[in-house]
Image 1: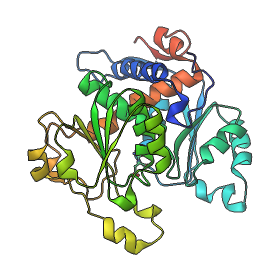
Image 2 (image 1 turned 120 degrees about the vertical axis):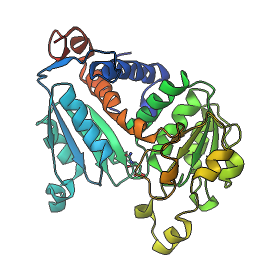
Image 3 (image 1 turned 60 degrees about the vertical axis):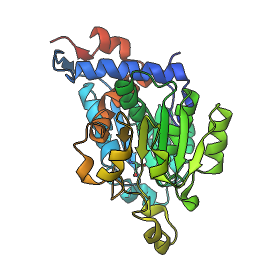
Amino acid sequence: MALTGRDLVSILDFSNDEITLVLDTAEQMAQAIGWEESAERQSLAPLDRILATLFFEPSTRTRMSFESAMLRLGGSVISMADARASSAAKGETLADAARIVSGYCDIIVCRHPENGSAQAFAQAASVPVINAGDGHNEHPTQALTDLFCLRRHKGALEGLRVGLCGDLKHGRTAHSLAPALARFGCELTFIAPDILCMPYEVTEQVQALGADPEVTEDLAGALDGLDVLYMTRIQQERFEDPAEYEKYRGVYVLGEKLMKKAPENMLVLHPLPRVDEIAPEIDDDPRAVYFEQARGGVPVRMALIALLLGIVEETRSGKQSGLVEP
Ligand code: NCD
C-alpha cells in the first residue's frame, strides 16, 4: 500500500485502505503538532524537501494549509504569488510548466481553472503532483479533510447518512467527497435546485460504487435522519450568466430555524468560504464544525505530503528529519 511517489489527482486514485492510512497518519500529525491538550508538542528538525505551490485560481485555506503543513514537517516551500502572472501569461503550456517546476522541488500542489488540468500536470511532472482543485472537476484533499473531520466526530465513516447541499453542479469538493463516501458505504442525499444538481457522471460513479442517492430540492424536508449536512457555496465564478447566479444565490440558508428541525447530532460541514448559505447565528451550535474542519487541513496535508514523499517512517522515528522528540 505504498503511497510513495504517487500523485493525487482524483480521490478514487486512493483505495479505502489508502484513505484510512492518510487519516490515521493525520491523527499522528495532529498529536505531533499539539492538537490534544495532553499531547507533548514535538519539535521539528529540518527536512531537506521542497514543496511548490502553483495556484492559478484564488485560494486561502488550501494553499495556506499546504504551506503550513510543509513548514510543520520541517520542509521548505516555494510558491508563485500569482501563477496567472507567471510564464503562463506568455503562453507556456501546463506540461512545460510541470517539467520546469519538477526540477525545482520534490512535490507540487497545483490548482487550475480547467477540468483535467491536474491530470495533464501530473503526467508531465517528474515529482508527485497533488490536485488542489481543477476547475469544477475535483478537489481530493478537501475530501480527505472532510473525511478526517467526520471520522473524528462519528468514529467511523461506514453507514453515515450524509446530505450534500448547494451548488452540486459546480462544487468540486462535493465531486470528490460523494464518491469517497459512497465507497465507504454511506447513504447519500443530494440537495440542490434542479439546474445545479449533481452532474450525471458523478451520480453514475456513486451508483457504481454501491450508493443509491436520494435527490431533492427541499433542504428542510431532507434534514430528518441525516447524520451530516455538507453545505456548499453557490459558485458565482463558474456561472456563464450572472443573472442566473443572482437567481440562485441565497436559495439555501441554514439558520437557527432549520437547525431546530435538524437531528440533535447532525454535524454541519462546509469546505468554506461561505457566502450566505450558513447564517453566522449557528456558528456556536456544537453541531457546526466547519471551522474545526478547516483546521484539520494542516494535519491531513502533513500526512499526505509525508506519505507521498515516503518520509513517514523517518518522521515517526525522528531518524532523518521531520518530527522528532525534543
Ligand atoms: C473550495 C474550492 O476551492 O473548491 N474551497 C476550498 O478549497 N476549501 C470550495 C469553494 O470555493 O466553494
